[in-house]
Length: 99
Image (cartoon, rainbow, N blue to C red; front, top):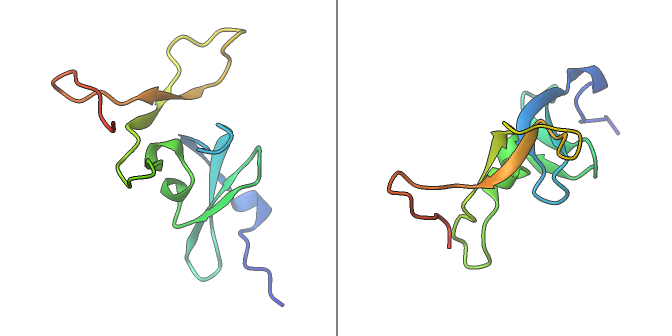
């Protein structure tokens, strides 16, 4: 059986975090051109790129968007060392989205 995973050196680090463990989401391209996402921490996988695995794409049980966004951590420090974090998405009017 052929291995359909991307070459280990073909993974690209994205600016997104895993919706399951908040780990770093990687993207890779298979030989057939399809894109797969993988969490570098928990190993979760998703078809179609980072959106399938990232916190930005998380949905509520009713199907509505969870209102989360992956953003650069502007307050990085020893206690909060993550480069990318998840934040609540706010609309232009300042109202919270997703709920």
